[in-house]
Length: 478
Image 1: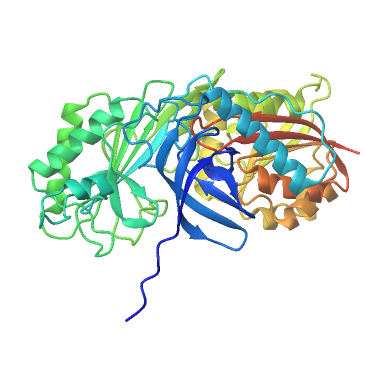
Image 2: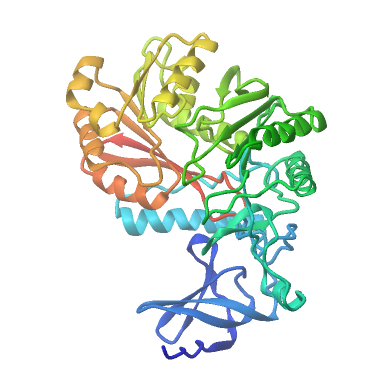
């Protein structure tokens, strides 16, 4: 029999010092940093240590002795459990300060390049109901808080189903959400109605471990044109499941005429991704539209589109200004848009460019990019699909022309070193680097420092109440 480890100690009356990474805060104990979630600087707390590493520890608050003066009251009833909006207890002004400092620290400590004075971070006008996309998992086992477990009658089984978010460390369980503040409230009404209907009709919920159960996943998208999309993922197990699924879809269509695009799919895979699956339209169209200035963008269930529509416009305005702000009508530059996605930035800057070449590794996204150019009557764009390091080569540049401007908006992992080398060899006059991960952006800036200096830095907050932040950097050839 293994020896049961003694619980780690409780540290009493410690003062939370400052905001740290990943939405946590920290304080120092002896020679270590202790990271703690769901508190704010100035809180005096008792902390249970839950994990010890060589250079740091992790803890959880078990008691608040004194609440900080720098504190906001979370509006969400699920705060502290869901984990999606870890900074709802921090005033928005303080969130922006923390994000600005985070970018400064990462670009300074990791990038180690000469930096100008940063522009003040652009805050989001909406701090709630700002997202245009959310996914909710459906599971035959819901997650329970310790308080719920303590109040449960002895002998009651933990079999209740739920629709909500996955809890960290419990991949097979869902924490049921009654009201999420991230999207328009109609999403809550539809999700709760689907749950009530499914329970009433005795529909099975998905078992992640056993990979069976009919109701599997819900994905919502809305747009600034007022359109609303819902994709329901099912997992057909037995005869009659298709009919049961269609009955649910009909109920949803009848109850919520606001839905302009109602889609479904039978997903038999071991995960919830559906990029390689054929989707079916139950009602309405297979896509919705977003608008930005005089442009219209087609957004399908598989499309990538910035999840904060209003703030995406400000982000792209910054990118366009950094890239083409001083371009004249007579001397429009050739622009390469790397990691172009569905061509949103490429089409957004096309009016001020001579020609825009977009490159993206997802073929379906490139097809969307071409469609978005067509529906906006944009004729000076060109799009190519493939792995960036394989497409963007010296031969490609020799064929299509040396860009005066390169805009790059890579995924969180940043740019492959081969891509950085090709950019250096292409030697554009300026580079605009849009990033959702300032740490990998800082790493890449160090690689680009051989030929480029950082001229401007503009943080943009896309995700209020979370530690995530976008950053736009303008680089000028030395």
